[in-house]
Length: 567
Image (cartoon, rainbow, N blue to C red; front, side):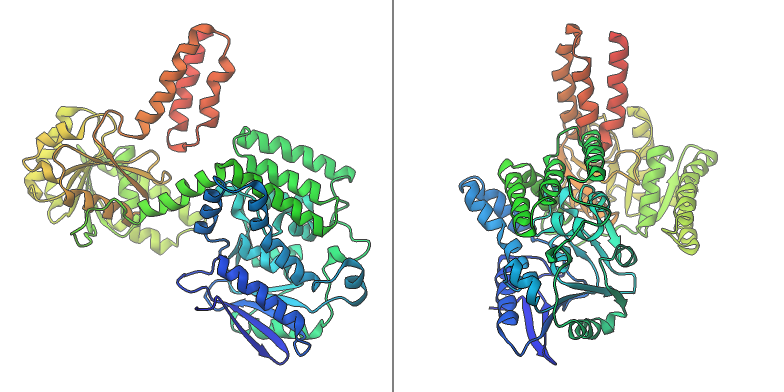
């Protein structure tokens, strides 16, 4: 079996090089967990080994737990008992605790300490990939700006399950730690150095050597929280008066942001609160208790399946018809320079395509391009794009009222006003230049694709590509297949959406397509409540709790209009 950890000894220091096979980035798998325990035991048992360095053999350090393994835990919850799930999830915590204590009890550890473990972080270290370094006695990181550290588990409905809710607060204080634990935001190497998480920064090619030197210089190590008289940075644990205010504020903010719909945030707060008033050995068990509750309750499994497994499959073209080579779009014809058309032009040009942006007159077309100018200026001012990159992007957009400029385009998207006659008119004008062999897409949000395709003499090449506003921010795109839409058109549309790095879903040509139709169901279910007159707060909940930002704002406006009428 291929090893996930390459173990070697240099100058009395064990080097644990993580290299999970078959993965572009290291992830925590069951095999890795087994080998980590074997390596820790080997280091602790061999008197010739005086310390250890944990590093990565890949360009980045580690991205946390394999989502397939987490999905397996969620599936296990359907048949296993909570106790069995707890024993499964607490295992990594116990291994890391053995690593930092040397397997000694508290009294022996304070008297004789243990062998040092040093983490050499060469890039991204997220989730469990950050919790392993946190359990090491010392941490150093590359100074080249590639390092990104964090605990993003809350974003998939989970909490850190490898001691993150206990070690981070003990390193940087409860208030600072909660900002990272409850939001999932990352920190840079400089941030980590400032917080005291990192001992030092070093050039990437010197990381392992510097880590070895650190281990040799500190042959007897102990974590701060295992020493007698340890106090949390900034004060005591949960019982400290200052911490009481911190938890009160954190609870209020959590409720304001989640409305009680994401238990992971509340469980993180509970885990930190309870863990801060007991020894570390018990604290990590408390964390695993709350981790188990999240697995058993199911929200995390649903979020992982939807937001990662299914979303990733969609973005990789799971619904793409077979038998067609990749059909990248090099030149896009964009009919309509309004808000939607201008946004589509921008994201397409940003993806490297040449774009012909057409409207009824030159002034309207120029106004559409001005939208891209504003977005570029904003990106340049925020240093997300260089001035040269911005100029190149804008140069790829040609604003015009001349349909002849569509010659040699390999995809047309129409986004004019929702008027059937107008759409038919621009469709015929465009196809007169390009011919009916081109794939033609409509961005309509209300009109059936099958009927719009009647304006084309080749309806097999007619399809819907429905964006949401603002296009540059909204990740979802609906691919709508009409009654006669062919597989080639579907493949081309999916290839285009993949080029602009958005998430496509393929839907049938029914009223409202998918997004508007599903949300419309919520609205219709709520309408019978209106005459009762005493449920204004309940009617406001959809605008607060609906988790899809692409429809939240317009529907919130409609709810407010309805409530104003009732008032």
